[in-house]
Structures are given as structure tokens and as C-alpha cells.
Amino acid sequence: MKSADRQLNSRRRFQQAQELAAGVIGIDSHIDSLQRVLVMGEDLGKRWNVGHVDLPRLRAGGVRAPFCALWVPVYFEGAEAIRRTLDLRDAMQWLLEKHSDQIELATTAADIRRITKADKTAAFLTVEGGHTIADDLRVLRMYYHLGIRSMTLTHSKNNNWADSATDTPEHNGLTDFGREVVREMNRLGMLVDLSHVSDKTFYDAIEVTTKPVIISHSSMRALSNVPRNVTDEMLWALAKNGGVIGICFGEGFVNPSDAEALRADIKRETDATSFTGRALDDHAAEDVRKLFGTRVKVAATIDDVADHIDHAVRIAGIDHVGIGSDFDGVSGPPNGLEDISKMPALVDVLVRRGYGKRDLKKILGGNFLRVIREVIGK
Ligand SMILES: [Zn+2]
Image 1 (tube, protein in one colour):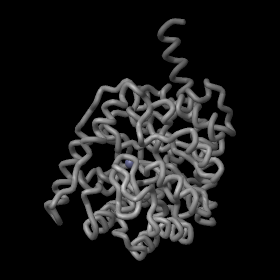
Image 2 (spheres, protein in one colour):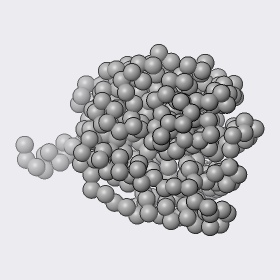
Image 3 (cartoon, protein in one colour):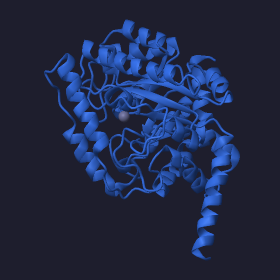
Image 4 (cartoon, protein in one colour):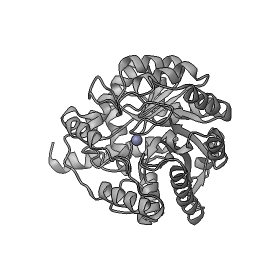
């Protein structure tokens, strides 16, 4: 085939995949772009050539309902963590109000259907890191009232009631209070997110919860052996629970040759600081700028991501797999999936691997929508 023909073919296939994606509710269960709004003051209503996500690129990628993470670094402790969560919630509010013609807050599965039907982006709010509730269920309840519908029990370090996957075990999983957090999230109608937690915390949470859980951004440990990824046993438990995993695109998550750098990163993870207030914000701003300023050369490819999807589907079943890219939270997305507008290229790879329309609908959002409906009740 001549190279011009090949180019035309691949453009046509991309278009076909884009059309296919347009017919489904694209859900991505972890996007970190709010950091860019809060720290850099970037208006995500316009298309940027930096970062991975903005409203125009979400549209191009067919991702109509992103989970917008309020990610609070673990060096924000106690009241400072609550303040940071509110600052991020405020950044989200600014975006919702500035572009009310393009994006709207979604707190239920019905909202997601209604908002996407009106051709707008449905923003589903999540909190990253259980340290943000400062060991107080009243704070958790107020987050719910601010429209937040999901929380990862930990981030990169243990908190006072749960062990993290990337820290030395301290509580042997969940403490009694940690179990109470899970029960309160069940009662309120918040998704219990088990990305970032230790294996023992995962199994403890699965045992306590009466509702399906999510793993918003992790991949397969069988293919890339990092503690942030999940084992096949965890996938079986997830399937039994009725939950869903969003496959993470982070280079070390999906490609073993990039995993060494990820493991070193985990070791380097920023330690506690004595800063508070403005000085703490400046410290975090520097961190975020560094993350967004870093361009790393990665081995990971779009086919690696598809391999992780294949593996998850094989082990957990087609009803328990989704997408949780971690765009704007990773420095080196895979080749071929450089930002969220490239999602149709992944759809195309999956089509060529034999996934039919029904399967794709589930992976690209249907499974997450089901879990949202089951947990929130509407
Ligand atoms: Zn994360």
C-alpha cells in the first residue's frame, strides 16, 4: 500500500472510531486537570497545547463525563487538607460558571445522561486521598453536599485510618474508623475508590462495603509489577463485588520498562513539610508546575494500554472494566495516546482486537454508569 493510501486509511479509521465513540457516554474515571485551573489559572474552556485535557479535547476524544479529581497532596494535613479540597472545589465552580454553556455538574447517573444528551460535558467530582476529611465524618458529609460523589481512601501515604499501596503498612489495612468511613460512604451514596490503597486495605474495604466499589486509575500487576497496579486476585474480588476498574495510562503502570522510573518516583514521594497557609500553597504550586513542566520519553504505547484492557477483561469480565487515564496527573502518557483527544485511536485498536459495539459501550462508560446508579440510587 502506498504511504498516502495508508495515511488516508488511518485517518478514515480514526474518524470511524470517533463516530463510534460519539454514540457512547465516554467516562474517564480519573482526570487531574483541576490542578491546572487552581495553580496555573488555565481556562480549560479553550484548547491548550500544554497538558492533556480541556473541554475542546474532551469533546474530540468522545469523553463526555470525566471524573474531575480534587487531588490534594499528602503534605496537606488536617485542616490544611480541608482548605485545599475547598480551593479545588472553588476552581471547579469557576469553570462550571464560566462555561455553563459547555459543562455542568453531575451528581447522579441520571444527571450524566441528561447533561450529555444536551451535548454538554458532565463533570463528576471526586476527592483523591482520604486524609482530606481530617478524620471527621462530618467533613465527608459536607463534601457530599458540595456535589462530590467519590473518594479514594488513601493517596500515596498512609493516613490515620488506612494503609496506602506505596507506604510501609501501619494499620494492617483499615482501622475501625476506616471501616466506618466506608459504611458512611455507602450510606451517603459515594463511590468507594480503591486506587492507591494497600492490598490489605483493598480486601478490608471489599469486605465491609455493601455497594460496588471502583478502582479509578490502576492497571494490571501481572503485566507491570508496581504496587499501584492490581493483582488478578483483586480483580476476581472486584468482579464478585460488582465493581469496575478504570485502566490507568501512566507509562510505568502499563509498560514494565517504564516501571523502574515509577518505582523510583514512589520512593522520592514528597515528604511532610512544616509549611502552612500561603507558604504551603506555594510549595504545592512548585510541585504542580514541575509535574506539568516535565516531558519524559516513554516506552509505553497505545498497544500496552490495550493489553491491560484485554487482561482485565479476561480476568474480571467485560462488565468490570473501564477507562481511568490519569491524564494531567502523569508526565508521560503512552505513545499514540498523548492527550485525551487521542481516545478514538484507542477505540480503533480495540475494534481491531475484536471488541464489538456492545463491549466498547461498556468499557467506554457503560460499566461506570451502572456502578454510579447502583451506589447513588439514581
Ligand atoms: Zn492518583
